[in-house]
Each structure stands twice: as C-alpha cells, then as structure tokens.
Length: 571
Image 1 (spheres, rainbow, N blue to C red):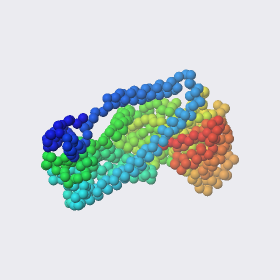
Image 2 (image 1 turned 90 degrees about the vertical axis):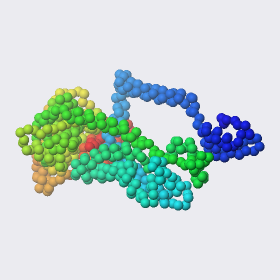
Image 3 (image 1 turned 30 degrees about the horizontal axis):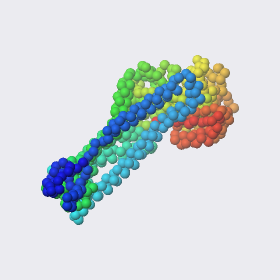
Image 4 (image 1 turned 90 degrees about the horizontal axis):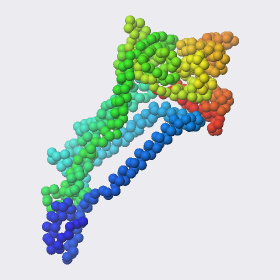
C-alpha cells in the first residue's frame, strides 16, 4: 500500500519521501485536497506462499510415475508369467533395438542441424554489427543514437553498443573481443569437420577425416567461453530500479544522472551470463568417462597368436586377450602404436564365440591398413604391439533370432558373416538344440576371384559338416563375381558339368554378374510364407537401398505372413 500523507504536505517533501522508499514518481497532480500519483513501477510482491507446495507436489507426481514405469517394465521383462507374452511380442524389442543401429544417421542429422543453426547465428550477428554501426554513426538524436553514445567515454563497462566510435569497424570488434575471436575459431573448426566428413574424403583419406574430426575439442572449448563478455548486452538489475525502459524510453532527452530530481536515470548495461556450458557439460562428462574407460580397456595385454597373409592384400590376425568375450557379428577397435599412436580403426570380428581366440581380417585399402600389412610382412623378431578396445554390438548379433536369414556381403564386407557361419559350424558339431534359425541364405559379391580364396575353406567345411549331419539344406549360399574377363567366363562355361566350381573349387557354382534381388526375395517369401526373415547387409549404400526396397515390397501387410526386416552394418 502507498503511505498516506496530509494534503498540506509540500510536493517536494512528498516526492523525496516516496523516492526514498523506492517509489519514483513520473507525474503528480493536485486538485484541492485530493492528489494523484503516477508511479514508475509498482513495488515487488513476493511469490504466492502455495508456489513451493505446487512444485513439491509436481515433483512427487513425476517421481511416482517414473517409479511405476520402471517397476512394471521390470515386471513384464522378468516375471515368468509373462514369458510367452514376451515371445509373442518379441518383434517390439527387435524394432526398438533396430533404432540403435541408426546412431550414425542420428549423428549426421545433429551435425547438419549444428551447421545450419551456426549459419543462422552468424548471419544474425552480421546484421547486429551493421545495426550497431548505423546506430553509432547516426546523429539524428534518435533513441538508438542516444543509447550508442551512453558511457562510451567512461572506463566502466556499462555501454550498450560495442562499436565505441566511428573509427571502430565490425572486423576490429570481431578479432579483438572474446565472443568475436572464439566465434571465428569455432566456425573454422566446424567447417573443417564438416568438409572432411564427406564420403569421398572419409573413404579415401581416412586419416584426414580422423584428425579433423577431433577438432571438436577446440569447438566445444570455444563454445563454452564464447558467451563470456558478450556483445549482446542487457540493462542491469540495479539500473532497472532507477530506470523503467517502458516509461523512460518515451523521452530519452530528459535522462540526466547528475540531476537528483530526475525520475529517469541513465540506463546502465551489462553482459548476459554465459550459459552454453550448461548444455554441453553433461555430454562432455560422458565423453570423458567413455574415453577413460576405453583407455583402461585398451591397455590390457593383447597377444597376437597368428598372422596370416591372404590373397587380395588381406591380413588375418588371430589374437587372445584375458577376459575377452564376444558374440557373432560384433566389432572391435584396433590400434597399432608402431603405425600410429592416435588412430583407432573398427574391424568386424571373423571368429566365432566358441573359439578360444578372436580374429579380424584387414584388407589394405588405405594408408593405415597398408602400413599395418607391411609391418606384419617384415618378419621382425618381435611381433608388433596391438591394442584392442571392445567388442561392440552390431545388427548382426540378432541373426539367430530369426527363423530364416538372408546374409549379403560385398567384398571384405563378408567378415561379419564369417563369424556367423563359423558359429553355425560349431553349433552343428555340438548338436545345439537352442538354434532357432532353420534356414540361411548367404550371398557374397566380389569383384575379383582372389577375394574368394581366404573364405572358401570355411564354406567347404560347412558343406561337409551339414551333409554329414543330414542338414544339407540348412545353408544355401551363392557366390557372385562382378568383375571378370571373357576368357574366365568361357573357361567356367566349358567346365559347367564338373562337380566343383572352377573358380572356388566348391560344389556351389559361381555366378557371373549381380543377383536379381526381386527373384531372390520372391523365392524366399514363397519358401517361408509365415516366417520372419532377417536381411543382413555389410556393403555399399547403393546395395542397401535396393535391399531395403525389396524388404518393403515383399513383406506382407498381414502380420501372420512373411515379414522381412532389414539390418545394415554401420561404421
């Protein structure tokens, strides 16, 4: 409430008393014994007492909902009475897990969003600088001109316009202030990261992509301090008490901080506190934790049991590591300090979980892989040191969850399916009754005949094992040679009646060209009219597009009939 005063009190005393209580007057009128006061801003009222009760009740309600969700999720996931319910609804879990296979797609989407909003941010600041400059150079007595002239000649940091004089240019402000300089640095870092992530550079010059991508450390460091001493400023809380902009902006020429009777003091401005650290702190802490964990795992001793050079510049490494446990189709990161101390590259495991070692096949397809192959070919007295981090899961882990599976590998992309087929061989040897999969269709596409050499021994062993166990129809594999000359094709046609293939020596004959996927999917759909078929690919994006299209085309809308699920390895 406003205090009451007798009508005879002089207006100068009245104004002084009200001002001392934090009630500056904009206008006062007197009519006989009555008075009328216009107050610049009303007194601050405390928040309602029931506000804290509402916050507490809302927090309790949210916490109760989280508890009930977790409780019933674990109940349905663990309770025996829902065992068969989980079997019937297993496709839901498969669908949810498939979303995690799109982590790279999500990563790229976030990167594109950052690049887009960075461009918007830069354009907005360029406009800001232009408007700041126009306001500083204006001499028309407008509000923006008066605001630009405030506190420019003082040592205090109370100014609003960062362009302090007509000689100050936007370029000068950009490279001499913390926001401007850090903005340039993080923009350059972002441009380098985005351009080096292009498909051509990533495939042909992986080292450039690898090192440029680690500029994210500079990017986030600059982002955290970018808002310190910001150029976009706001009126301070103390100044708002003496200067209400909604009322004082109407007559800026009356601002006078030296006049004690003035109702509008000159406004004072300060930087907006930096808040970007609040958004990046949690991801940075998670990343640091993950890097520490990976460093600890990578320091565990790895023994290279065997190194074999296969045709087509493929190096096989068989290794042993204490406590190492894997599943089919998983991959690991490998580092060879003698080649590069910083570079870690992902490779799919080609061994089976039943084996007492784990192995990878590495094709020389870049500077790092070529140096690694040369290092192991030099026959040094001491085997080069290898560091391993992993294993990590991929889509191929779910291959045994399907009644039928189509495995498609292109070139060295056959590696995850080598693990799958080896595991099948061991399951047949031990008569594993838990094997849910009834049929596997395997397709391998290669450009040259040498690529078949290191994998044909495994296929030959599988042929013999399944024939002896009476399950010769379990594995249906097709080999496709996409690059050949006329002499090879003629030689294969001349020996077509032989029991074994002239290219691989296997019983299954090699096909020349590419598969007719429509025919293949149609045949599988006919053979499994009521099954869920998993389609797994490790190969190029163009092939992925064709297979995904076929999965949609040959999947029935009736949930009781055949359904194709597409899965792709992503690195």
